[in-house]
Amino acid sequence: MNLNDIAKKMCAKGKGILAADESTGTIAKRFKSINVENLEKNRLTFRQTLFNSNAMKNYIGGVILFDETIRQKTTLGPSIPELISNHGAIPGIKVDTGAKPLAGSDDETVTEGLDGLRERLKEYYSLGARFTKWRAVYKISDKLPSSQSIKSNAHALARYAALVQEAKMVPIVEPEVLMDGSHNIDKCYQVTTNVLNECYNELKIHKVDLEGTVLKPNMVIPGSDCKDKSTPGEIAKKTLECLKKNVPSNVPGIAFLSGGQSEIESSKNLNEINKINDTNFLITFSYGRGLQASALKEFGKNQENIENIQKAFNHRAKMNSLSSKGEWSENLEKESAT
Ligand code: 13P
Image (tube, rainbow, N blue to C red; front, side):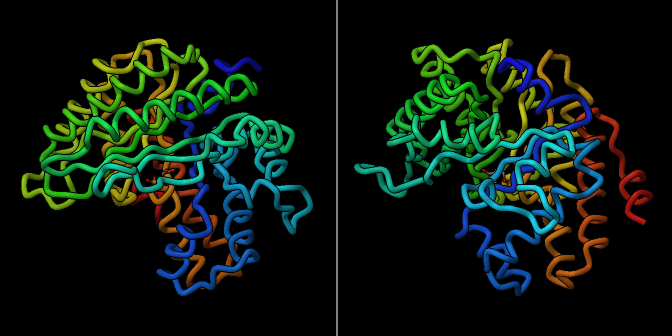
């Protein structure tokens, strides 16, 4: 498969991406919330339970893994990447090494991981990965994000993407404008515009073939402490307008992060976006919390109750699959849950 085919398969209509690439530190926070000890064995059990569920075949085009996970052998027989491929989805890998303090800027980060990346990519390819992820993070406040943060993160994202394509994999380009703060939706629109513009500027300079990429952006949404709430219709309209203006039309797929929205909010907003999608972009989900929160709760109740964990995951994956086609509804949400 060429890079464009892989990108289109990851975001195929009715499918999306499962972001199961929480670092050991991040999954520690998730496990703490359900009183599960953060052991390698528990991380494997939870993840292999999801990757072996029925939802994988119908609703999941790709799974983003963490370094530890892509090397693990399941207790079911195959390795983790084999298990994912056996279900018809594409294994992918997070390759950044995290957002680190940006020297010279207060309270901002630049995502690192370029050193030795060419060699690491070769190994990940040999382990079965066919796409990768790199996440840049931007905070909104009166003065932030700084142009220093916007430029340095875009430069790193572009160098990453060029190396990934050289290694014959599809780079997911993830510039995440955080929801934290009291800013309104228009501020998010403006910052997302600036961030996307700089990213595509750098991707062009680094000769990245956009047809072999997937964009993973935030939705255009008010800050979590903003008093002016927006309706899903407003969020959809502004998000789509922002993408139409700032994302080159040859990008095949756009897969949103959920970014701290609840499971229902992230399904509802994605659905509204697809209801009015008049572009050629395949618009879908690449959710972590938005796909796993309910399943994680079930895992906390009883780690051995595979059926309940998979049931919760199957339901969320199905709901988001409907949203990727603009076919989700409150009624289907309730019917299918019961
Ligand atoms: P959330 O959907 O929980 O934001 O996670 C997506 C992700 O991969 C963040 O990098």
